[in-house]
Image (cartoon, rainbow, N blue to C red; front, side, top):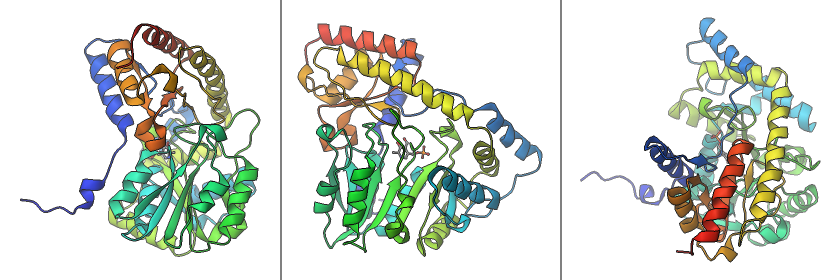
Length: 393
Ligand code: PLP
């Protein structure tokens, strides 16, 4: 009998990948499936970025790079943050990572152990809780409520902090809700955190380019009072349609940087060299493609919200960021996961049940509108027909 550690009985996963596999299996059987499940842009990576990777390989960038990333890329990340948010970041605190996820993995690993508490948004990205459980720390959900436009409540968050809290995970713009926490609320939260100087903060800002209705993204790096304990998670996956490249970055404070660098050396040595050159081209090149993609998401957002609000038993608040809608389906009489599953099997529409993002996700489903308007409209039609004709199971 192999004796693996008990932590592996506790680790979770992301059901969006299981739904994707099921949707692909049904499509392979010839079914017409519309996938509003997985959270990845339906656009191609802009050509000039792809060309930069090809060129890097042709130029002989085949070898290991420094574990923390090639210096010009770390400098470009620092310059990009300075330009967009007027924050000063040393390239020496920037680490290039193989995607956004490894930053949550590493930071939860740094702070999680039995007896420790880690706070995370619920509903929220499922890997936060999974990793917290893996480390043996106590997961403390921070409720993210529809009544609060799916923003963090500073008051509610601060009340949940205890002397055992080691790490607070924040995510705005948010997956799965599309919620954006307004600056006034972030200000309150940061002010309150001054009373808790031993609590580290990991801010997952992977959707920072995708904010709508004239909102501006609030980057937590702009709060000096928490800079010595703030970990920033970001990357290229969503902004530049680069999910499969596995390219992300983190800004680590103080000694955490060296811990993360050592973890990288132990784990992956360095990020794929050509992907790093692609990332460099992405940051240094024209941002027109990004603007176009975001404008297109904005258009689809309106289509999806309007369509959802016409469905029987469904109401959908307008998401202010990312590319997700998180409609309330309580009045349909369906449990959210049963509804998502029946919609995929019977109506050929892949979406994700809210409980896959936490206990407070019951009564909601997540639709990713990273799909064409035509497909979104078709999916909404199918959902309407399904809800009008099928009784809740
Ligand atoms: N953080 C959030 C909130 C996400 O939604 C995702 C991807 O869905 C990630 C991080 C992970 O990004 P990556 O694919 O770069 O690992």
